[in-house]
Length: 127
Image 1 (cartoon, rainbow, N blue to C red):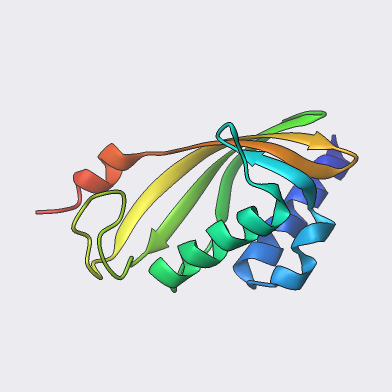
Image 2 (tube, rainbow, N blue to C red; image 1 turned 135 degrees about the vertical axis):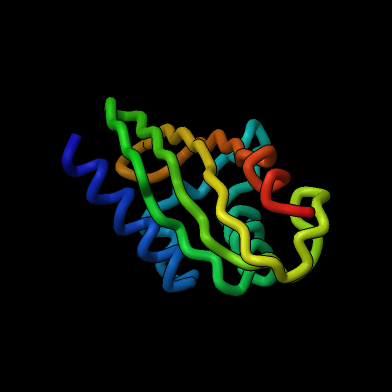
């Protein structure tokens, strides 16, 4: 269990540093996200697009639960999306929100991801 948590924390560090060349160390080549088979290249592209839309994006774990080969996390974000985000006119405003995410690991790499962002939390912060 501890090993899976350590791998996950290293993965978050990789994301926060935008170390895309290291992503394959943590993510399975056939990764799926919310039921979509993205493969590693598509997953990397999705993350790069997230950082383009939210340059100050940082993944901050608040809660991590492990039951190998699965891991669940509540992630906190304090950031300023440049334009519309999730259909909301954030447009550079600072917002705080959470993501609830579940992972299936295969051979110590993330193989499946299910993610839900708390959109209502963002809506409460906008005029």
